[in-house]
Length: 239
Image 1 (tube, rainbow, N blue to C red):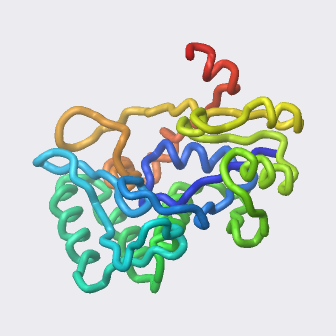
Image 2: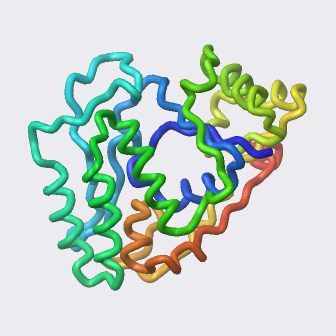
């Protein structure tokens, strides 16, 4: 059984959808410290003037605050501003209306934290593309497992009965691979496909919101979400 553990991401890029597709169990990891500059509350989109950050403004942010505690700032109408930017940027996209409908679905919700907005944005993208139908989504608060870093991740995977832990590339900096092996758990790193597709506004880049894939390809974009992994020893062999 494959387990994926990830912090919330705001309308994530297609590579993240590939990771979710591989999960038998996906753990929403939102009781860890919020990091400025992460993709928790922002993502890039392409415009005629180049890449642009679509960011949810935050309020009351304090040092060491957990992601689940971070609140969006509703003193400005960022929802309307985001929609206007996307309407303009994707005016020529064939599936613009469907993309805006997904945005509206998330923005119509009463999400009181950035974690909930991220989780809902992932949910609507998966439903649109028909992904993760057999994935069980679990909130970290349901597991009651404390600790930090590699030890906590291992404890979570073991508690869920996982045989494989599928992770993004950043985990190489802190994960104790041998500890997972001793526990009989295989660590696999994402081998992102970065599949190209017809894209507006210049040269193709995969590092934009999946809303871009929706706007340009519609539901057929699901065919470009092609997940694969590398065993950890192969992933780190060139270090």
